Length: 204
Ligand SMILES: Cc1cc2nc3c(=O)[nH]c(=O)nc-3n(C[C@H](O)[C@H](O)[C@H](O)COP(=O)(O)O)c2cc1C
Image 1 (spheres, rainbow, N blue to C red):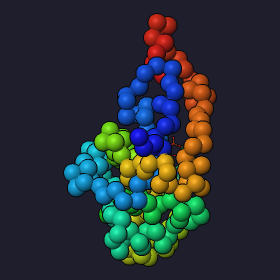
Image 2: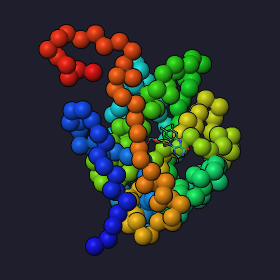
Image 3: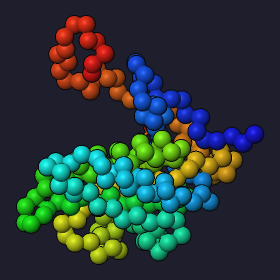
């Protein structure tokens, strides 16, 4: 039997949450041979497309590049640090771009809307047996130049999508990082005010 890296425990929660959220995590040990089926690729786009946005202005833009393409290599060229080590294994790289301004007016929630679209994409990926790892560690100006982006289009993050590899196929440095424990603040630390009626203790 092959071992996979997907041995991270379910995210611990005080009450059950949706399966895809409970299982979601951000690995680096992607299967370097896996090719994303066209339908999965489209489904990720659809999940992002139907995310809510302020005034339904939909400021989300993507550059989508499959491993082996020139665009994929251009994105790799802008990566920083350890991202250079693990990212080439992903099946797909997405540049998540916010349209910051339209018709001379700022779109104030553009980055918030973009983040939400990527969150929906991530959960769709998880529900399809894929994984996502996002990145802020890239040189924005280089990426902007590589794709000749207009000034109002801001590359905010990169999104690597892929399938987990068998553990023995992943270099040790990547495997070690993926095996590190994942932690979270307590729910109470997130909540500045919790003013709920007695008898509804399950509401956050
Ligand atoms: C905006 C953003 C930027 C991130 N930047 C990087 C990065 O440059 N390199 C990396 O390996 N992980 C990066 N991550 C992944 C986070 O480190 C990871 O999501 C976090 O440690 C929580 O782990 P989990 O997603 O497995 O729960 C980033 C995540 C986000 C949302």
